[in-house]
Amino acid sequence: MNINDVKKIAILGAGMMGHQVGQLAAMNGYEVSMTDVDSGVVQKGLDTIKKNLQKFYVDKEKMSQADADAVIGRISAAKDLKTALNGAQMMIENVPEILDLKQQLFKEMDEICSPDVVLATNTSGMMITAIATLTKNPERVVGMHFFNPVTVMKLVEIIRGVKTSDEAYQVIIDISKKWGKETITVNDSPGFAVSRLFVVLINEAAKLVSEGICSVEDADKGCQLGLGHAMGPLRTCDLTNGMGVSVHALEYMREILGDEYNPAPMMKKKLLAGELGDWAGKGFYDHTQK
Ligand SMILES: NC(=O)c1ccc[n+]([C@@H]2O[C@H](COP(=O)([O-])OP(=O)(O)OC[C@H]3O[C@@H](n4cnc5c(N)ncnc54)[C@H](O)[C@@H]3O)[C@@H](O)[C@H]2O)c1
Image (cartoon, rainbow, N blue to C red):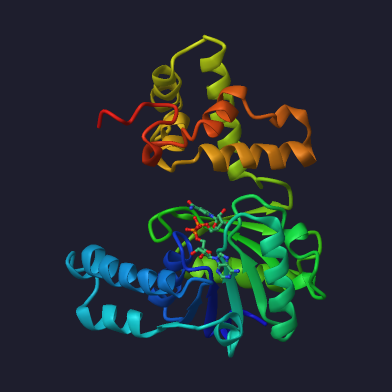
């Protein structure tokens, strides 16, 4: 399998990330078959893609109406996994960050499709080797970590599992470049490179605050004005309602990499109190007054 063989891409999980990855693939001329355990999510994803193409491309004269219609025309909703994978040379998985769930789905997909079909996962930090562990063909499993919003963010982090083949890896490299992305390649490890750097920064900022060394605002201001970050780590965590995701990522990293990844007690307390971030009304900041 090489990039020229790839014509149709199955998208498993059509939530926040899945529908955006489907849009990106269809905008680059690929036939896309999207499926989700909840068919309402696929329909919502299709409606969002349509709206976003209108707002960000057609209305801004970056795309003609005919081209936008053609993008939509390339995306179909599939009733189940088998239907989505029918005729696909590649699959990108976007289901929740639950290891058992991903392992079972990769086992199922491995049994459904021929061994040359490339199976990619958009996991934010679970080890690719672990996700592929129940498959008979782990060499075709590879990490393809996108960033939100998918059509805007330049980076795709590509992760090689212990058994990922050069061939599968090369397909993901080539397709990411064809889709206008920059890539970095990392070897398999919890949190890879980008998620690990990011949650460690959030964790360290939370520790600074709880040790009384600086305020939430100043931890963020320091990163913005001193390090040139677009947004501070604590503000970014709140914006994505990310308290739970960050604590769980740190705990997963601690399990494999050691105690230095222990989540700050302050973050665990906030998680227990439901203070997840903006949507919850409270996270590191109080959002109830907005
Ligand atoms: N949200 C982000 O910013 C972001 C960024 C990069 C990567 N990721 C990763 O992408 C993956 C998906 O995250 P998300 O934010 O899109 O989550 P989400 O909850 O918005 O979407 C997940 C979708 O998977 C579906 N699903 C659950 N079980 C399924 C099954 N058995 N078969 C088919 N579909 C099933 C759900 O119905 C849901 O629509 C996660 O691994 C996450 O870590 C997320």
